[in-house]
Length: 111
Image 1 (cartoon, rainbow, N blue to C red):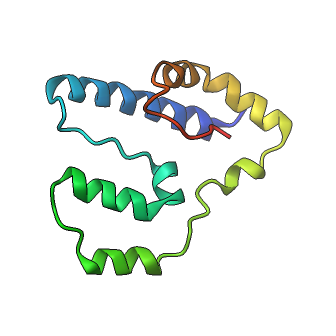
Image 2: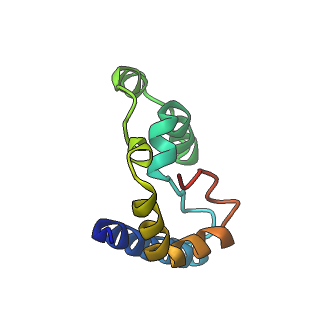
Image 3: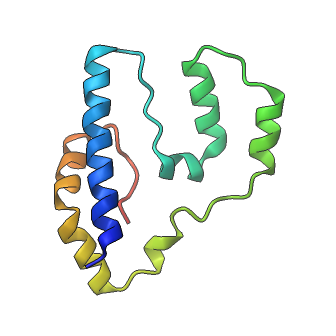
C-alpha cells in the first residue's frame, strides 16, 4: 500500500467538499484551480485567474510564466508499476467516485 496516496486522496476529498460548500455560500465567487491542469497549461490558467479577478494581467507575470520551466508534476504516473497503481486505485476509490460526479469540473486524466 502507498500511504502517500491515501493521504493525498483524503486531502483532495476534503478540498472538494469544502469547495462545494463555498460555491453554495458564494455562487460565482469561487474559481477552482487544479494543480495538474495549471502546471500543464500555466499560460492559459494565469489568464483565466486574472480574468476571473477582473484584473489586467501584468507583463511581469507573463514574463515569469514564460521563464518557468514546464513542471514534472505529472511524471509520477509513468513511474508506477501495476501493483502500485492497483493499490492507489483501491485507497482512492471514494475520490474517483466523487470525481465522476463532478465530470464537468475535473477534465484531466487521473493517470
